[in-house]
Image 1: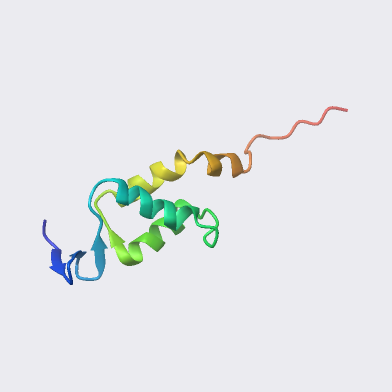
Image 2: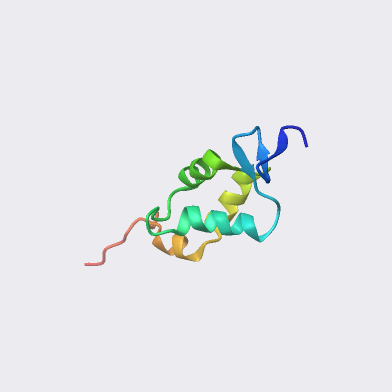
Length: 88
């Protein structure tokens, strides 16, 4: 694949980002960047930006979107967009 080199024993994308091979490692790094208490379950954009500073893989955007959309804890924390109805 064009743009990928082997540097210091790691696959590098354009020499600045570590190329993450397909598999469980991608899920693990998304989990670390999104779920860690210090990060606080950031948005898709925030998670992608943090990952993109040091890591790369094709379809990263789609993978992050899918991970966050299907992450049950995040879905339960999101504020409801339903209008509240008050009974008197």
